[in-house]
Image 1 (cartoon, rainbow, N blue to C red):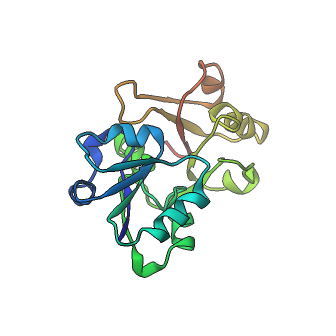
Image 2: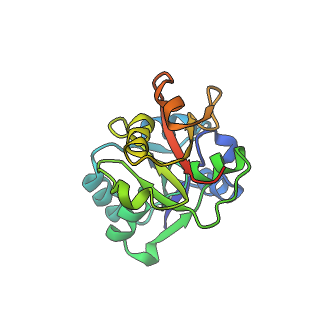
Image 3: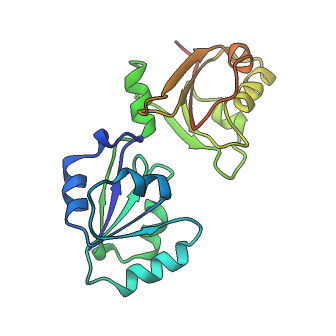
Length: 202
């Protein structure tokens, strides 16, 4: 069986008990460097996941007799590796264990419900900001190209009244959550590892 385990937003305290149990009983764990480093006291084989997705799929399909766990940040199906694996591994061989996403985490920190939330990402793409900013409540997973400041510029370009919440390094010791107007966010220092929430009513 292939387990896809969401590790939560970052800090290993947020892994579910089921995820911990499956990891403990795995022969092999596969994941990004940071995720692998977070798993301590594991005596099996560790394989780093980077741009070698096709090779990883081949390895998994050739080793179905082993208990393999693939690590995912947050929740595997919120802009994570879950979608890719589900398209390349037979459903009967796949067990997905959801984790707490960075989206859920930041909303719990600022005490705002996620009802009617529009979720999107700027990873490797340019969002349709006319469509995105038409929603009253948005959460966006960002990258180094389109991050908080670029989003704020798009808000100001449309003369919209919005509150922006930026979550950096969520659940880690250096976590930082910044809340402000687009102008205030633009005048803040650079951001790192961001999730951005855009609110019409705050």
